[in-house]
Image (cartoon, rainbow, N blue to C red; front, side, top):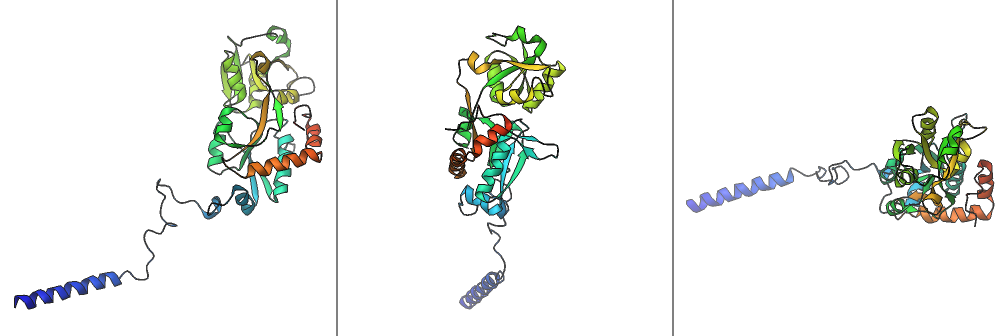
Length: 295
């Protein structure tokens, strides 16, 4: 009797088990990787937001049809015309580079301190804005060949220029700088009390308003934006800070994501632009021909 009862119970248990297994047929697995959060707790990115299957960066840009260029307002490299269109040496060359890839260009104005984050997050595809190729930049990005040389200069009120000549230190001066820029590094190295602002153009506002004694900006920008015939005719530049510090002129380059094959694509584009005269003609349009590297 006990054996029969045990056999009956075992048969009943097996039947319940089979019923439970068959009840899940036809349902999607709960662990579908396309629908579940990532290990970091964030939802998976949409398919179009990143290259699929280890695709190259170049293929990613071509697939989405746009090259998104991270910039700031930095005349004569990137600035807006009367119609709000981005122009300048860098902007025009970025348009030509995008065309060489068969895609449209899109300009995205970024906060300079966050340029590496913007690249990593794929909010932009490159940083192309008179960017100095310093150790920090080259460690964080894939960088192009240098295409331009520049230096940091001290901008001051023209009527006080005499008192700033031949300085070997900026101690005791309040100096406006673009936050995170080579100009900030140069000013701090010479002992200035720095006043960080978001854009190089904003440093000129500080000096013009008298809220800073001086500003440190790129020579290229100073040549285009201060002095007679500019919006800042009452300002001038007096010192090449690279010379004061015994440093060589800076090199500008374009930054891409680490390991990006867009680096090679840019280098090939730049060599072709130098060879066919496009780079020189564009430089002459914006008055930067003395700084652009054409050999």
